[in-house]
Structures are given as C-alpha cells and as structure tokens.
Image 1 (cartoon, helix red, strand yellow):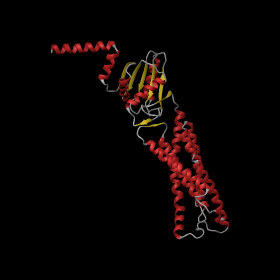
Image 2 (tube, one colour):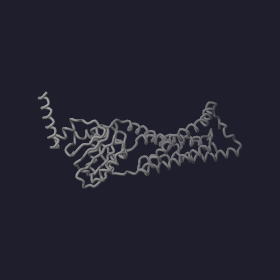
Image 3 (cartoon, rainbow, N blue to C red):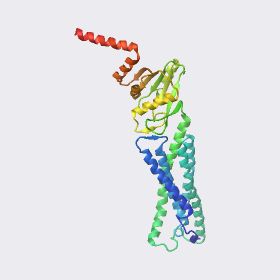
Image 4 (cartoon, rainbow, N blue to C red):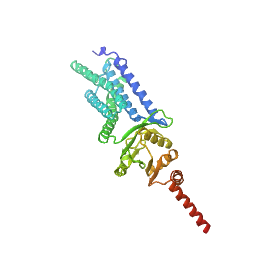
Length: 363
C-alpha cells in the first residue's frame, strides 16, 4: 500500500497547490507594493487584499504538507481529527468572507476569498484519505508513528518534529489571521446594512491620477433654492455631525449639502498622501457631476473652514458667502472675495479706510 504513494510534492495535486501558492505570494507582494506606493489611488482596501492573499498562502502551505505527507511512503499524517476540524472551520470562514464582502459589493475581496477553497478542499479530502490509510495500518498492526522503510535517524527525527510542531503552529497562525479577516468582513457588512449611504456617491479624479474614487454628498432641501449651502466638517468628523444644521437650513427653504472629504463618512479613502489642491478640486468635480448649482454659501467648521478658504482661491466666481465656525479666517482672502463680489462690503471697506485716515490725521 505505502509503495503506491511514490510521489509527494510533484503529484498533480501538489503542482496545483504550488501554482496557487505562487499566485498568492506574488499577489501579496504586489498589493503590498501598491499599498505603500506614494500617490496611489485606492479603489478599495489594498491592505485587505494583501492579508487575504497571505492567509491563502498559509492554507497552500498547509495543504501541501497534508498532501505530501499522505502520499509519502515513509511517514503518516498525525493530528488527523485536528486537521479535519481545522479544515471545516476554515471552509466556513471562507463562506463568511465571500458573503461579508459580497454584501458590500467588494468584488475583488470576494474573488480573492474564493481562492481559499482549493487548498482547504485538498486539505480536507487528503486528511480523510490519510485517516483511511491509518485505519488500514492499524488493522495490519503497523505502529502509526514508526518511520516507514529505511529512513535515516536524522530524517526520521525531522519528520517527527514536523509532525508534532507544524500542525498546531500553523493552525494557530491561520486561525488568527483568518479570524481577524472574518471579523472585519462581518463588521463592515453589518455597518453597510445598518448605515446605508444616505446621500449620493459620485466618482471624482485627483489631478494627474489615472483612477477614480467616490465622494459622498448628503443634500437636503428644495433644489429650487436661490442659494446652496455647502457644509464641511471639522477634522475627523463625518457628515453626520453637520446634517442637523443642514436639515435646519432645509426647513427654511434652503438647499444644503454636507460633503464627506476623502476617507470621511461614506467617501472612499482616495489616495495618500493627499494634496490639498487635489481635495478641493475633487470636491468641485463632485459638485459638477451631481449638478449641484450655485451660488454657494460655504460653511466650514474647524478644519472644514480651512478647506473652504483653499477652495476660494480657485473657485471664487460662484460664491455668495462664507461662514466660518471655530476657524481662524484668512482675512486678506475673505476681504478680497468680498471686495470683488459684494458692492455693499466694498463700500464698507472704503468707509473704514476713510475713518482710519481721519483718525490718523486728527491724531
């Protein structure tokens, strides 16, 4: 019986698993490079793809160990029931991964998760085959742990060590990483279910970049309003923190839109590092894509006010007003806008200059 198991790694099963492991390993390094590439545009979480392929590579190594051990003429697979339980749990994890990321419409993550099935099926099938071989050996009175044929002492010790250490060590590693990915898949899927996108997503493009990502615009109020209030939140705050103000404006007949900057709320992360001019250009692209027409009243809280002041530098032609909340204003920029756009404020500025001149002359 054991002489029929002549080939180990270089069986057709072993070659398939080797090719799969190479694919997972190459994908791991490719996504690692993309995730660390300066100026990248992230259409999804490339670190996630990196970890999925790393877990897939761990499964490949484990499947290769099980297949090669089963087919070897000089050793038997140990921890049979442990391998069976581990394979079944990982297969269930794979189903949850595909379902969790599929619910989020994250097709790449779901497709990479599908590649887990092949090594896990090989692992489970050949564990059962090894179990049947173990039963035959027991009926023939062959000790399970005795080295087969004419193994040398060193080789026998090596296989004995691997049989004792490799399974529990790699079970722990595979279970840990897979469990973390499952939690992320289930939690993010739950977030998408409980907190669906309340506004509109539109694809925008950073200057000079070749990829697109989505920005979220949450608009309330009548579209026939004579002005549109655009709201940007403070640092680390999503659009939900200002939707109350937007709804209050809408109750007074005004159109109001809260915008999630890249990586905030329901907007995609975009790219890293983020260039300020690209962020404001992306916001402007989104306004044009969704036909959110001006004139605009820019409302910024904290850091949101700083972003609107940058927006003024390149898009001041359709601005009706600026509101800063807990933001240190650039007076020169604001006055320049007012001087160019508002006759009343121009007259007030001139009046203040005259008053200052009169005070200096009297002094």
